[in-house]
Image 1 (cartoon, rainbow, N blue to C red):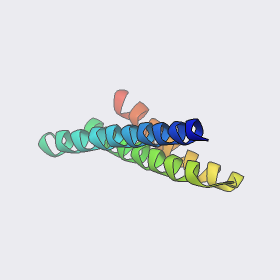
Image 2 (image 1 turned 120 degrees about the vertical axis):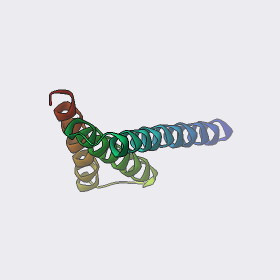
Image 3 (image 1 turned 180 degrees about the vertical axis):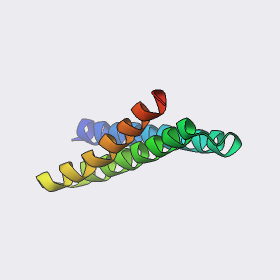
Length: 92
């Protein structure tokens, strides 16, 4: 039992680390956008913001004992939008 609890604690710490990194990227991209307002930086900021939302939803969903398929669909949408906006920012 102790090993399972330790593994869950490590997983939660890792998920919080990913979320913190995603928020950091979002903050940095927002600061870059406010300094140099361009369509590329705007798209990058929006992309990172949606990726941060996706990470948050994934972290929340992973804590649910039995998440319905609808939850997994909903948590995937921000990733699609986020990566789409990053793709757009690279090709503008």
